[in-house]
Every structure is written in C-alpha cells, then in structure tokens.
Length: 535
Ligand code: GLC
Image (cartoon, rainbow, N blue to C red; front, side, top):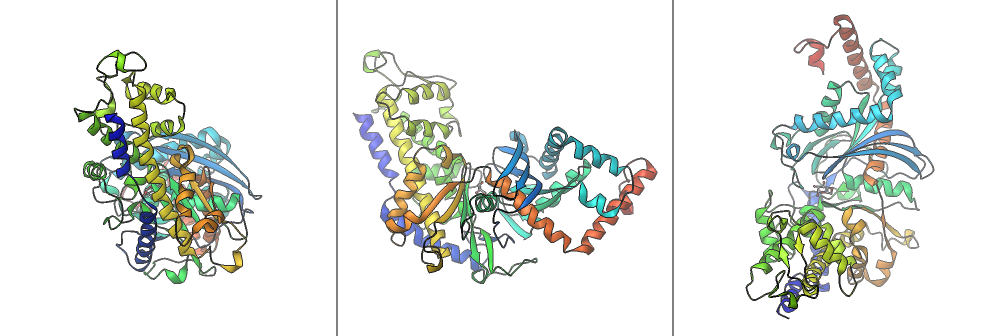
C-alpha cells in the first residue's frame, strides 16, 4: 500500500490543471509576440524566408537530407504534382562521437559521405553521367542544370536564417555539442564537404524540420487554406507557423517575396519560458536540467519531448528506490510477489545511468491496460533488467510514467492553442467552415498512446478554444514531413535561382574554370591558387 500511495503522491506533482493550461497559453502568446519584436527573446521566432505553402501541384525530383536527432536521413523525392510523392531513403545512426566532435568539418564530412553512398546506390546513372561530364567542358546550362540535384537540407537546430539556403547556427540542442560550428553557415559547411567529393548536388534550401512538416502537410492534404502549423513531438519539440509579415517587427536581412503578405516563422518553442514564469518545475525537472549539457535552456522541451521524458521518469524511479519504507522493485520473500519470485535489479541495469531509461517504455506502459500488466513487466525485464517485477511495481511505474506523459501532452496543447489563436484561424469568418489544419510528426505523437487524445482534452479546456474550437482543430500526422517539405522548399529555391542569372553565371564560370584547370593538370587545383581561392 505504501508504494501505491507514494506513486499517487508523485503523480500528483505532475498534475497540470486546466487553470495552468490557460495561464500557459496566455504566457505563450506574450512570449511569441516578444520574439517577433526583438532578437534574444525566449521564443526565438525565426523568420524562415518561406512565404507560401504548396498546393499539391508541385512536381519534380529533389533530394533532401535530415539532421536533427539520433539519425541522419538521405532521401530523394519525386513530387508527382497530384498531392502524392514517391520517396526513397536511407537512414544511418549518427555516431555518438560525431555529436560532440572537435570540429564541424568532422560531422559534415560524414554527412557528405552518406550522400555519396546514397547517390551511388539509388541514382547511379545520374551520378555516372555527372562524373563523365566533369571530364569535359560542355554546354553551360547543361553542365549546371541538368544533372545537379537540388537538395533541401533539414537541419533541426536553432538557426539564424539569412536567406533560403543560408543560415548560421545559434546553439546546439538535443545532445549535440560542437562549439566550432556555432555562428557558421551550415549550408556552406555541407556544400564544402559535398564539393570535396565532387558530388552533383547543390544545397538549395535550409529548412527546419517543423517548416518541412508544415510544407508537407499542405502538399498532401491541401484545403482552402493549407496547414497553419507544423509541429514535431519527437526527440525534441518545436513548431513553425504562418505569420503575417506585418506582425514581424524585428529587422530581417536578405530578400524575400512580399506578395503573399505571410512568412513561415520557426518558433523554436523548445525554449518557451526558459525563465520559468509558468512552466511546472518539480524537483526532478530541476535535477534533469542541472545534469543536462545546456542548463537553463530548452526548458519547455525538457518537459515535453522524447529525449527527456524517460530521463525524468528514471530520476523519479531512482528516488523511489532509495526510500527505505517503500518496497519498490524489491520483495521480502517470493510470497509477496504475485509471480512467486523475488524482484531483482540486475547489476548491469541502466536504471542508475543518465539517459538509461528509454522513453519508449513509457509507450508500452501507457498501452498495457491488461489486469496483470504482463507486457510492461516483460519490458521492464528486457530493457531495464528488472527481474520479476511484481504487479504493484508495474502499477506504480505505469502511474508515474502516465503522469509525466499526460503533463507533456497538456503542455503540448498550450503551444498548439497559442499558435492557433495567434493566426486568428478560429475567428476568421472567411474560413469558418474549414478545419484548422495542423501537421505533426515525431515518435511521441506517433507512438505514445493517447497523446493526441490528451492534447484534445486540454484544448477543450482552453477558454478561447473550447469544445467548438477543439472540434475544428485537425491534428494529422505528416509522416516523413521534413524530407518531403525540404524537397518542396528546394523546388521553390530552384525557381528563385533562375531569377538570379548573374550569380548563376558566376557559379558556372567557376565550375568551368575548375574543370579546365583540373583537366589540364590532371589533378585537383592546388591550394592557394586563384581557382581554389574562388571556392
Ligand atoms: C529542437 C531543435 C529544433 C527542432 C526540434 C525538433 O528543439 O532546436 O530546431 O525543430 O528539436 O526536432
């Protein structure tokens, strides 16, 4: 009984009431507007230079790469022009040591190598054709245009965007830490490594995964108005939405099309309320933050996203294990365990190691509603090496995990509601019959049972949304959104390139000279000469 009462008391500390949700929405709106007015606010509100969403008729073959969490994905996307697409992709895990590499070059060289492997595997013909062309000086447009893939680079970290394919890294998140890359243009870093390998690829667009998700959602489910928000609830969490240009008060560098009157803004909401005006803050939240590599930053993300929820649960579990009067994952005798054994935590269990509890087990806990919680207990054995956990243990684990998950979903509703309210979509009489469409992606929203239901429950409790508003908000999965979205933005960017003949020509002359020089010398231009300097 002591365990049950203890679990209840802990779960209550993760309660996030309707009142809290409403207060959260008001503060979110305030911080959003602060971010639109000046740099350096908690919510970065980054203008993306994307000024329109697609309508489903876009066509062509593009490449996209995605760096943003545990994996690096390379894909090619054929947009069919009828709201459908065909996607080919490969995925590799990012080696842990590269996430904290000494130089940016190490990481980006690895990325370029993966692009080469992908091209050789899936687009051999185009690749070979390009290699042959490199050996000859051929027609200008043919060389530049025909065989060079336009690539959309999904780079899901906070970026100061300076143009559609230019942006400098503000800070790393999600466990990456390569100080050398801060302040550098990540497109240029990638292009440099691509060029070293002589790949027929031009980095045409720089995209946050949330922006990609927004684009993809609008391409695949076009309505009268398109999606208003693209959001990720995965390893990290963030959202991008369509804002009126007139609301963006802070200065913007670079050129953009003003005709639509709109621009997609990347909120970087992972850092909402870093100052903790309204975010809940249990002792475990405090500890998690203290032990993280970026204390005081990404405070909302640390309460909402997949990277952190498991760690939060682990910290609670460890504290519970230390309480002498609570019998958690331990038995007096086999008699007190319904499996007639005694519970053991194996010495190799990762329960006592930071990040040792994978958030995935929280989905198992939420999904297992059987009386004996057999699946969850097996999962505790196989992943955490807690042997023969009793039913009471599993129930306590499930209750606490559920409370952490529920708080995350209700916090997610805060961000979603604030953005819907900011766009005015619920009150616009012209679109009164249309759903307010939101594209989401990420492991949490995809695999955590009832995550969306819990979001809706909280949305209904928000004063300016209510039952009626919540009914109109349509939250739909935009699977592979970032890849497809990056391709769509690369398409827009390719269109913009043609409007810039001078730069295009200079690009071509540079290529031509390099070709001629290489041809003549039979080797790469040497470092320090004028051709190399041009690069
Ligand atoms: C982190 C990144 C953000 C990204 C999000 C989801 O919050 O800072 O750029 O969109 O994770 O991947």
